[in-house]
Length: 102
Image: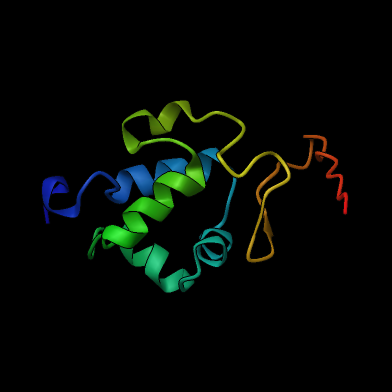
């Protein structure tokens, strides 16, 4: 399949963005709510993510795939993000304090 048919998140962009964040396929899958095998199949180009996952990938990484190689260290979820139990902050970044007021 060509990249045009797969949409903006093609195999290379998904792999590049995942590695830029030092995430395993399993960690990315957990954050997106899918199986690790699905991430593997996307990265192998067997098929691409459907529209809902295209949008989730953009939200998850905080940028469009066109600029995936220049990903910021912080996504729309913030430094201390936690999607389905996956902490997206790198180990050498300080966690953000969250104040809960009633």
